[in-house]
Image (cartoon, rainbow, N blue to C red):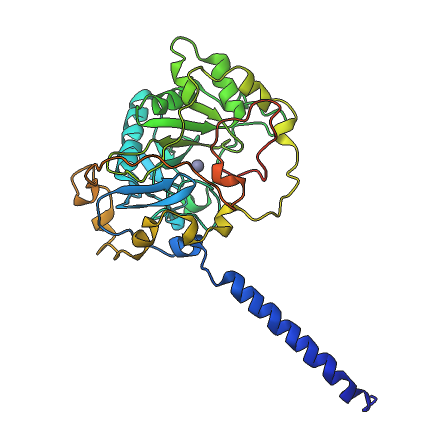
Length: 358
Ligand SMILES: [Zn+2]
């Protein structure tokens, strides 16, 4: 070892250390503003307050959430460890109603996927939307006859209903009962949109006879091949909830659907590593009321905020207030996922990229 080399290395080490320190400082400055997903993702319970949604489906939060019970006679909550079985009381009531109505129609019961976090907001993983308690994912797999254990609900795989190459429904798997389930969900006036894989939309377009008016609510979207996504409109008592424009009046089986069966929507994402909106959002990107939603005191117990069929205090809804003019949704500096649920792009219009999950 050449001892003489040691003193020579000192300036290099000092410079290297300085660089490391600078990098650390820069990183600290960038991350100084906490991410909204970390703040909302850390909440285990909502506060006991009247229910109210703030903001848009992909950019907001909600107060007064209630939990769908882990199971009922006609439903089971899947992936329970995610703690995403929270919603506006109107949404939770509707899921229970759909489970009963579907059972009467011959569907054995619902396997319920993600709804929202206890106070909504952006999530650590998955979904661009599901932020204001008005979105729910429901599996296209019927509830098995034997009750699923909590471990099974974490691990059971879902059935993919669509062939990934052809984008068509797998004939062996799709049944008239699947169609009836979607028709039942679309029949509720509160339900404004149901997102399904384009292959499922096509199956409905090709097979539904008689009343086809409900097809208007069934919207093709990427993913959604093992579950459908049910979205209800802004509820009374939520003047700060920003609604979505109505779906076109026709059945949506024409040109907009044909676009999904071209090569364009399935091209590889050119920028797969671009940050997603949920990874960038800070509290400054959310409605200002979300700060208070986050700060409110936890409910005294899980039982106090678990939905009990409309009898609990937890179902209180805020008094309707004078409606403020609806603000336009500005995505600001955020990527395109903030408007993930914009209407299907017209043929020839550039695709929203990067492609949102659901
Ligand atoms: Zn969803």
